[in-house]
Image (cartoon, rainbow, N blue to C red; front, top):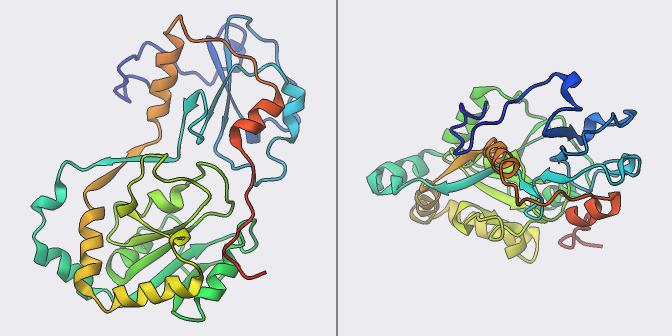
Length: 298
């Protein structure tokens, strides 16, 4: 696995064999798989790593951790404060890709789009109250809602959905179901390779995560859904400005989240890495809290 990932340090061996727990240098525990599980016997020299990509907005997410107090040595999560930073994905420069794209080609893509905003969603009642934000937004502009929370259908994972966004829509609502520190999911990253501009609503500081502002429109830059709608309408009438957004966005690409496993292997080979011992409350503090939305009417 580690050689396949082209890790600089790749002498680690991955196994799913649970009989190896007592002799392993590191054991990874995925938080959602720990319910009802009794902690096994531990190798005193090994590192136990808590892996989670769930936000603290899931009320039951850390309830079980008190049973595991002091057993986890490292955390491997989407938060920058983790011992091993493991986001859903990362973005990096595409090495000047847009300089090779003719201006007229991007402008043509913009002009051919016939629809304004799409949203694909399966959870209809969320901590972030994103569904309320969208309902307010729909008072001013059309938002096509696909999935369980809307009248339109496009099955998750169907390549035709991506193609539809690529050709028909100008914007996509990449709204998170919870607002918390550093929490940015595939809702955003899946839009980076496409010719569509994601509109984000998140609790994350994108610059802290190394995500340039040219990659998205942030709802926090607008006083209300109405203000956002007015901005989108102006862009809809200005093909040159919209094409400029596409051009800037095309200069970046998505990097696979599996890079975090390279970081894990590197840490295991570093004799100076501290062997910590986390209590449940420390892990909760590291994740931060679930922030209530402040962009909706009372």
